Image (cartoon, rainbow, N blue to C red):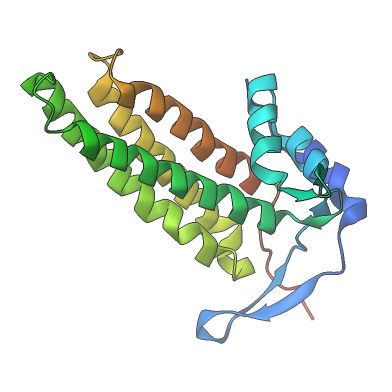
Length: 207
């Protein structure tokens, strides 16, 4: 079960935060943006992952490895959590595309019953929804006004798309798409968990 992300988790990263920043928002309004925390990959994953499986997925997603001199070196430095969200979102989108390609590769198979083929088509409608919402995540990260508010909505929308596909595949657990969807759902959930590390924007202080 995923760890709840609440005041305790936010308090844990407060020492890592910078000063508050003031930004201009649509319509000339201004909001004080809560600073985006910076931490290592390990700290971010430990903060949001409540199971060994999700922790392993998080570390694998966020720890790019570069081969140097025949060895592998993992990046171990503080970085803004929005960078981690972006990396996880790109990973989810890549996974969606791979699943869609797998579906296209089997849709004309004579061994695929017509009912299962229809289930695959309906499943992909959920993926279309997930792609639309997840594709907005990177844009959400460009503004603190949307980073905390719409970011969470976009993650929820992507997860709803994954669940819509899953419901269509319930009767076909042996389908290759069934297992792919479960894996893709976990990648989608990881983006949502990481987004909880982005503080909500607050109104500017009274003069």
